[in-house]
Length: 64
Image 1 (cartoon, rainbow, N blue to C red):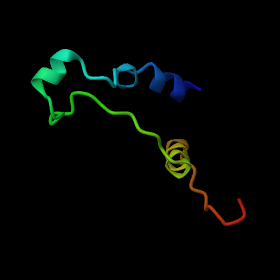
Image 2: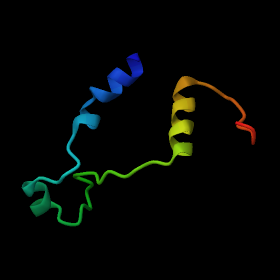
Image 3: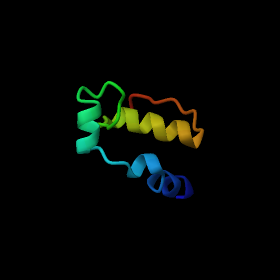
């Protein structure tokens, strides 16, 4: 719970994914990554991330 709270309250998490007008004018092609376009992650990527953060090294089998 502590790690999740830290992630959700971080500046990176709270930053907007929609480019401001100033960002669009200065960086119209997003070359300098002034904003982020959100995208969905698949379940495997989420599971790998959580496992990595938790320090779990388990083997995923066919019979999950």
